[in-house]
Length: 144
Image 1 (tube, rainbow, N blue to C red):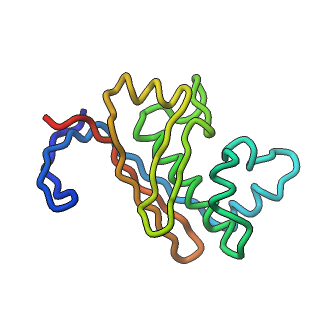
Image 2: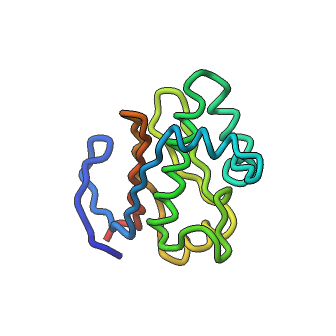
Image 3: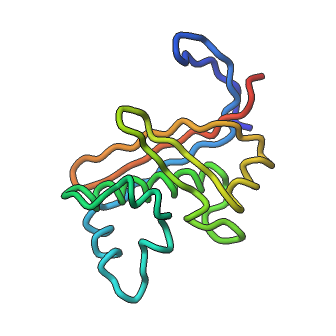
């Protein structure tokens, strides 16, 4: 656990334990190259169908994929695992409902690590600017 902090959430002040933090930056043009590389099929290795359905096929598809890829990397950093050692990119799913903040959903090895660490919720921010996508995530535990 990093530290306990007071936060204002939906009009209430609550004390939360910050268990981990992760941040990542992805070049959108590099993401396009990775997607186009036939030797390493990035999409099925890193994204589940529900994520792809949410992202869609619009003109900002690659930018959205880059943002979610950055978010997955940030979550893996907050877990302290990276990918491998029983944790796959598809164990971390990033969802965003219209008008809502992005959400983290875990499965498999990532969910087991989060449970072991006592992570109960996530705060995630994804942003895009200048051909880059960035994500920052806080892994939170139960209030002290």
